Image (cartoon, rainbow, N blue to C red):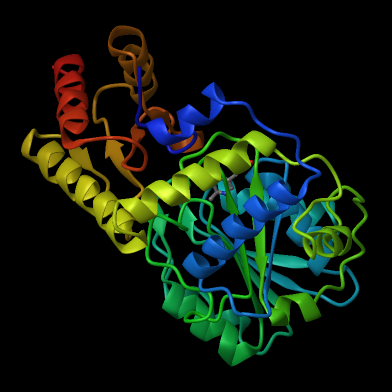
Length: 354
Ligand SMILES: *Cc1c(COP(=O)(O)O)cnc(C)c1O
């Protein structure tokens, strides 16, 4: 089996090894030390300021998105702007609606790129926060962080970034880009099992904490108190923390974050070059991330192709939803994949679409 999916991604041997060992109990000084070490390394990779905080939850990425909305934003005092360019933008809208936070969505059409002019109508309109999935994983569009960050700075908005498929995939730095909140999860850029998600908070975000926090499980207050001793109020995803430690150590041994990002960039570039040379069609309607390639399937039904790849080759790619369900597939370049894997996938697609 080979996972060309965006998450969980094709795993690395270093994380699989965790499950062959004994996993110790967690209310111990040793586990606290493990958490401290992982959090400090992640904080450095994030460019999180010294007095910022990093929290984690036993939940998939959406859990961290909901925790952020619930803890930071209030129905009385906030007005949010959301970039809605696909399924994950729509999810932010759904969460804001559920928590009754006044908001406006900048909704993009299929294939539409986000431009600065999309933001112009919202200057000086009393918005307090901007929520964005920096890479909209459902389409492969990567938004311009410089542009979004400038808009937030000039209009005094809190910048809340869902970097679930950006962090550890693209160059990303909270301080450099004035990012107040970063949401990420275990199964995407970090290449771990699904089930752990994180929220990194700048000093400014910590001060903005004015939501009602109706959900006690996701209370930032309880988490912040517990993290002072590197513990969580409830049972964490202990095994994934061990995977994280193994993965961060592996990345360091391989040359660090820059080398890691370069590996993804090179695999991505190789796939696109080879795919286009083989006559396949890459969607280039908007700026693309290095995480995945949106592949247009032309006269072949994309969903049927997805099923055939899994049944006949044991290759898993991502189908698309909504309007793109029958015309586009998404191919991940994150995870334990090689150029030979890319060649094999392209050959399979060529054979099935002949
Ligand atoms: C994967 C993903 C999520 C979270 O999805 P979960 O299934 O809850 O982990 C959120 N936002 C983006 C941009 C994603 O790629």
